[in-house]
Image 1: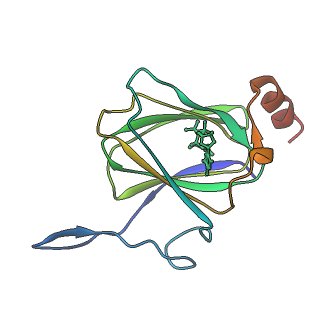
Image 2: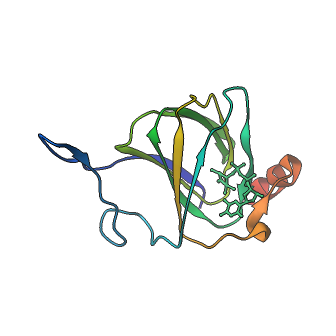
Length: 134
Ligand code: T46
């Protein structure tokens, strides 16, 4: 089932600063198989522009900010990630586009599967067709 949701991440803070821990089967909605991060993206650049057939991901802007447009089930939602204590969960057949990257943006992505190009739908019309077929 396609879905997106903002998830608050608990901060362990003290006078020295802040720390966030993400642990399988504890405060994550899936088990992590892969971590990657996106940085050094120009503000005018659009990334993403694809959907995944079966993938759960949690996106966290650990530095800076980025806007993410998600389209699924005939609805469009726009999220701006700008804090390290908030993650955007994207699961299932969701067309995503990331843009308005701040120069200092570091977008960390946790995924429940290894990288596989076969899981990508990079053609928008194919996505719309798949979306219709439910
Ligand atoms: C997503 C959004 C949020 C790898 O070799 N391994 C990997 O795990 C990934 C994610 C990418 N790559 C290679 C494939 C391309 O040659 O890195 C290059 C850039 O990937 P892509 O153009 O898919 O990057 P984005 O920023 O458009 O999309 C990425 C993820 O691919 C995608 O799953 O949901 O971030």
